[in-house]
Image (cartoon, rainbow, N blue to C red; front, side, top):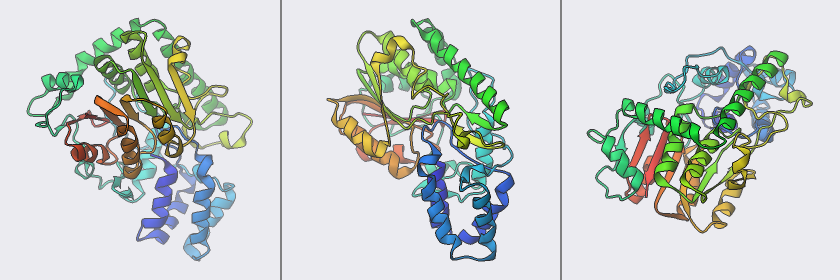
Length: 396
């Protein structure tokens, strides 16, 4: 979910726009920026936000003057506003004991002050009134369980289900075994080395610039689940939107490599590459969103030996995804991890469905934001599955 879209909806749709803008101005010493598991630069659309804010500022007096001053002092960079950390609400990563990064927790705190509804049919998961039922986000649930499906992955999932629900604990041993297997795939060690490199890199630039940076990747449980999924489905063509450093991509490519010589992953991404020479990247006290190390590119974590099976188109999915789908004969697995608004997710699912083969799977990340994937599955009368409240699958 892009903060830029949240702010725009916040400006346009709130019935209390003026009061909320005043509140936002009061957050000037607290702050926010960026969203986990996203791979687009805030600066690309920053001026759109400023334009909308200035339109409102020109129509307001006392309450808005504080925000005008804030924007002037920050050079028009909306991302310098910071907030204190809040306990993360995402599911625990059972394969590691590391807590969520500081940027994610700061973001949770910032979003808590925004409206509950942040886009059409899209809900703010950090809002105190957030109800999982609004997004049909029921962890472990199998939707449309009575719908017939010969999908091999769905067949495996049904074996784990009790009353059309898979207990979270049922995945513990499966993910553990899958991770152990993934580590045996040739060149897998490069992924963990590069993952450690990024963590150290971000610590160093954070210390140097007194700012907070995020790697923007899925948690290890989700990455291993994607590996397991690829091993079960044995897809020839995977399409992904949203890559960033590429932990999810790397594990899917490992799955392809384990399956055999065939299989490719093609993706669309807007890489947020750190630039030490750009002052916008080194603002003291700033909470940044996702960051790729300087000199690297989207999905660089993918082992060098498998780069010929991994292709990234750089740009906005709204423009590039239709072209990428047109370029393919068929799609076996589609994985969404870009703009998490209802309308955009539906757009991506529709695009993927055009070439999705029978037996294919559509996967959506961060399904807590909205019910798009479940509505999409309902439209076609196919089963769906909610993996631990973080990822969703629709089986065709």
